[in-house]
Length: 172
Length: 274
Image (tube, rainbow over the protein chains, first blue to last red):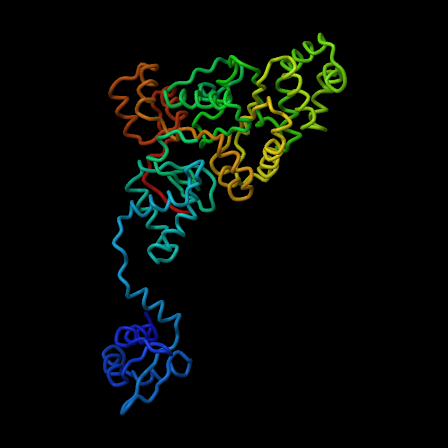
């Protein structure tokens, strides 16, 4: 997290929703930000200069308004605690949602994207998550060739994955 | 030893495991219920070809098996000409029976054609020639004509998969013209995924007549195979500990005295995304 991210995190935590963005009292904001950065004034000025905040008069004092919606959403997602999910349940749920109705197999690339979306993590982290689940619950999955991403197990490469329980019943 | 792991046309096929016999019953049920386009779906080693070959000698009708692995192309022309070429003896028998009847028109010409001419005709006018065979079988009271198209190892990454999908689509579109003909194809899961993405009209028809083979042997299947090969309790426990196995992997273990490496069973803990 860089200084700008920190400035937004504090703004989002202390502020309240306003028409133009998140509004927070200037003095309160400066003293809080000053706990982590040496020059809070410069940080705010920089935010104003790059169009990501503005300082406005508010009654007897001043307020800082944070205007970048994209940054606000990002900070909000950082601050929102992750859903407490069981990794195996999440992966099985993803495979079942994405599986082809005939074969029961899901594309591993799609499963990684699903994990990314559900956990709000970057691709690399989602890949590691999937690998860990497969490692610990190897007997719960079967694999087939194809797909958009390749999973290397020992010396074999696979791109499709299926939940074992779903493979037991002959489907038509 | 390797030949025990590859089903072969002509050798008698015995399906081991109740799951596979159930799949065969289901397939035959669909044939009797007048399904015309059926798919056997399964990952490598699940017994798609074995199941297809187990239909040789079915009581009613005629079964024709086409092994597409030996053919370069996968378009309609290649598929239908392979059906005729691989089953020329059956085709000759049908022609002989036709000759004994007083028939006229195209069927008469079909009955008189030599083997090369028939295969050439199937190449040039695949659907028309197939219709003639369909009509001949109907006329002779030999219906249904069950055609098994074993597409082998065609995967989504193979550029010929599009030709294959187009050919199956052509069968789909012409089912009404060849009502006594039942087409059974084998498909790997990735090709099924591809069809669902690029050819929804075909997928919608295929899903009605699809059989997904078990991806691994169930405890009941394992029990039967163990009995067949006279497997002891210790070996059986070892196999159970290996996790889900395809039928081919299991038969391989039986024939290699439990050589896990040779049978391609990866027990290594190393898993990564490439």
